[in-house]
Length: 552
Image (cartoon, rainbow, N blue to C red; front, side):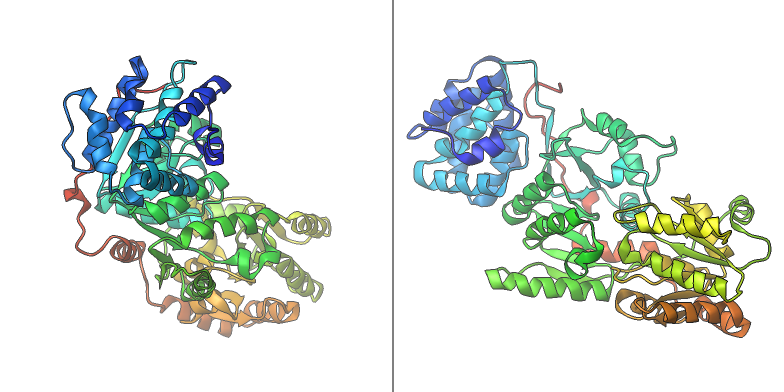
């Protein structure tokens, strides 16, 4: 009997032709045999590795662990005889060291019901033991963590970027790590398993890395030898955006089958609602992510407007017989940071153009941010004789070529326009304080952090009159415009530049806005995801070494 297609797509991953042959052979002989019969054929290092994994599985299920290796298979069979999908998910994850795919779990449950635990686990056993004996590859140490809070910071641990998503993930995670016991994880290079974040990767994820810039490749290499983590009876939290197909496919099975509580921060549904402004590949990647999120317990959106988008998506999910997650808006904070004197002086020296007022625009240059409209509005006013400097702070993104070309053309005309790809936090906050006005006329946003940050500094803002931007700006300090009307935007900018009374009123209104801190935001998220009475420091986190083989 040939191995099922799911084996070729999942359990065959990374195996040589010889190893695949061994898997086929083991699976073919599994029907009608007990797990003990299958395990009995394994010898040497593979047998010791398998015994360690079976012990880890039984311990995770709070079952007695036999001292004799010969009794492990029978104990495992008894544990799985009436197992539900969550226990099957755990067994596959522990035995293979990889988070299983949805169809792998479904197929294993069906084999369990038809032919018993031996048939259900035979492919996983074959995959594990087949990885030894043909080459020098050895699986890393495996750890089952129980009743813990597992926070997935994969992207944030591998980048120096400080986009809105990374800022939120770092601010939240740093406070949770300060106040609670966490397990911080990223993903393996093949997007098949969780790995503990250690050393530089952990510091990067929490915004604590003071060792200078490092490439994504060097960070990935540093994570290569860390421990594989399998969560059981845990709360899994995803505070960033996952787009890799392998990662989202395994998250789907995690959310649907594992029994772990699963939660995510919902930033926006831009690839659905304004797909024309997104990268062509993002819409497909986001749809795959939503396929996993639809099985999660809770999505905490960063604004009421983002909550409306996610609730609309959840209504669509009902058409396929699913309830979808609870959608709970928890708005981001409006906390200001006071830059140091050196940063303020550096900002003045770098960005001031004589006594000209500074117009600041913060955000990446993707079409959704509407930066071409800002350039057009500025050019209209420059041609009318208004004198001001325009500064963009943000990295390049998809479809940003026209923005770059337009900036270059305006520079050739000796307009006072500058674009910088990134600033450290102190210098960015100094720029907010230095600016006469911040312009943020985006087409669609989940929140719009630059609006909140500028207003927290007392700097007036011009932003869009719909969605989260109107929501964030609603307590004063901003002029609202139609982002699709260049003349409306130019008119608002002209008023703030030319009318000192209006500017003073907006600045005063901004300073009177109620503050909300990152501490408060992190606490609200914790209560929603984990629970007010939860105390992870008292939770048992079981680090179970699965087998004697440590690392490659």
